[in-house]
Amino acid sequence: MVNVVTSAKSPHDIINLGLTIKELQKEGRKATPLLVDEDPKQFWENLEKYVDKADKALIILDMPHPEITGPEKTKLTPPEAAIVYVPSELNAPNIEERQAMIESGISVIPERKSSECFVGDLTEDNKKWREISSIISLEQKPESLDKERSSIIKGIIDASFRSPFDAIQKIASNDMDFFRKLGAEKKPHLIVKAKNGLCEIENSSPENMGEMFETYFRCYSDPVAIKGAFNAIFTIKPTFFEQIAATMSKLRPLATFGKAKVLLTDNSIDHETLIFLLGKADRKLINLKIGSAKYVSEKTLERWLVGGKTSEAKEGGKTYQKRYHSLKDSYPDLQFVAADILSVPSEAYENTIALLHESGSEYQLIEEIKPTKMR
Image 1 (cartoon, rainbow, N blue to C red):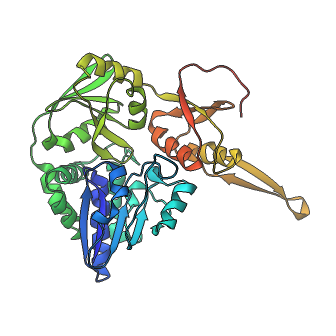
Image 2 (tube, rainbow, N blue to C red):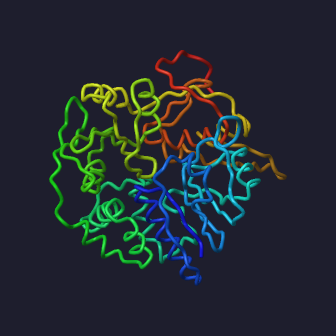
Image 3 (cartoon, helix red, strand yellow):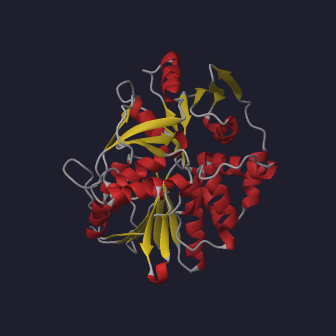
């Protein structure tokens, strides 16, 4: 028996957990799904709570990890057990964190896409689930959603909040029709308004999270304000919001969709303040001042972010040219506008922060750019 754990209220992680259970069952292994709805720091410091008591085994699927090394940071105290961590690109540990995990007896798998963070190979058998997961995690955003896919997506999201363990078992048994029917059911009507170039969703409730996701998806607007049973912000750049709101209020994640989150606002934020925050974050490009990388060379970090080419002369006068793939391949507007200033498209912000963390680079938000030498 092995316990498999991931984040609660995260539909794409629910899919990954269901696919992992399915793969383990194919191997004849019994597995127990577990969901974590506590502070990630508390999770990593209390892993013994989640390890299977009999077989001493635990698989961790893409749980966020606070900084692990150094004083006043998360202390890993894993029990005597076989523990495997499968991180996504958004939660990839840096060299020091990876080493701390390994020294604590935790095996760390190379990072995967958020939609592929499960135990098992990428096969035709799980292709449809991965395609749906890639939309829910906002790794891809097709220009349109047909009625069938829309119903499946809404059904998975709604089930992830209503009855997540039932959802996991349905995914493990490859029952996509269950989610199609659930997503096709009529839900409470959402009121969508556009004010001053910003999008607002009214009449919100946890019961229509699938409808809220579809509305956000079709709005082609970020961020989106949510009003109703709870007040929140739906955004693809939650780290940016947490940074600009740090002096005002605490934002708590209600739901996670890959790099996007629904962030609950506390009572200290009235509607006017919320709209102010939305306006402040309503930008296509965000400027970051980048410090030196701790774990890789400056040239390697630059290649990770914006790519580059190298040439090597060969015998016979031929030249071999190597092109480096980078984050810029997916987000063409990502670029250095000065020697140490990176201009980041909103939709690439979380990916960029993840790479900077992996490289050990410090960074800070800046509002004004002073001309300096370009890279």
